[in-house]
Image (cartoon, rainbow, N blue to C red; front, side, top):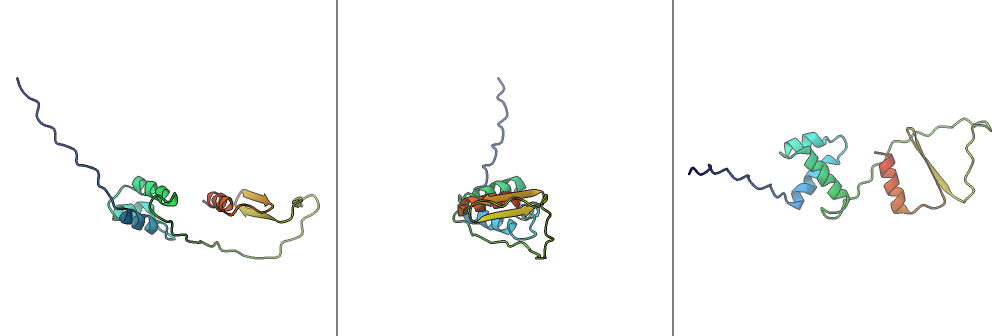
Length: 125
């Protein structure tokens, strides 16, 4: 009876260190960085780098280095809207209106800082 030829064993997946993952992810967070190019430079799949980025944001690769990115702002005197165009003002003291493209976010009162950060990250994506 013939025995089947032995099949070569698949090599194990590489076990990348947390430091390596952090280094790759942090390189992708720099302004103008391309995940695909950085992944190729480090000989890893771009989908894997996106997974590492998610883990990084969730704190699974250690403490997240908070980097504040400020957006350019131009101030100009806005024309006074007519009564028909005017938005009603919130009745509660304090409020915040953020307009980004087609999205307008209106928050009345004092928002929780963590919730506000999460919402702004999603809107500014």
